[in-house]
Amino acid sequence: MNGPVRRGDLFDRADGARRFTGPTTGDERHMLIDVLRAQRSTLRLKCSGLGPELSLRSVEPSTLSLLGLIRHLADMERRWFRQVLAGQDASPLFSSTADPDGDFEGATDDPQVVTAAWEAWRTEVAFAEQFVADAPGLDIQGEDSWRGTVSLRWVLIHMIEEYARHNGHADLLRERIDGAIGL
Image 1 (spheres, rainbow, N blue to C red):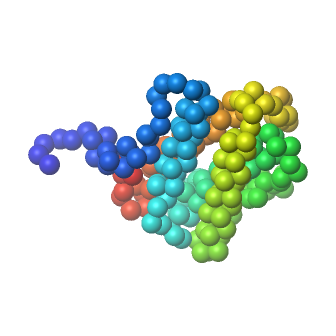
Image 2 (image 1 turned 120 degrees about the vertical axis):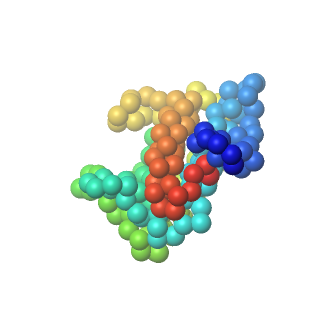
């Protein structure tokens, strides 16, 4: 490269194109599903090729780590799709009333912890994808102790926001681990 380059120009355009290939017009349901799929793919990509390094914390005193994000997002998938919308008795997997930050604080470099986090995340994403595919429409509702009555539409938008915010964290965390940017 010759001369100054914008940081954003270092991003792998081909890879980004594979994540964001969904519709830009048309049916709301398909657009929401595809944007959430792309956000989930971004998290997976930001964490690709890493093992125990996923547990590396950002900066003291923060407990933020890529592994913590995986565990947190598994709990969020579980909460919104299983518990709130499907009405299942599904307690969080990584946090609790006694340990509300267990998703981040329990994110250690133990390979079994890493494997369990990925398995939980994949399981919860698969459940959510099937739930959405089977739902008769975006207006189905569930009851949440925090927000009250919520629709599937709201949950999809909220999950897109949740992933997008945390994928920004993941950008910085991944760069700290191995200098990778633009994944």
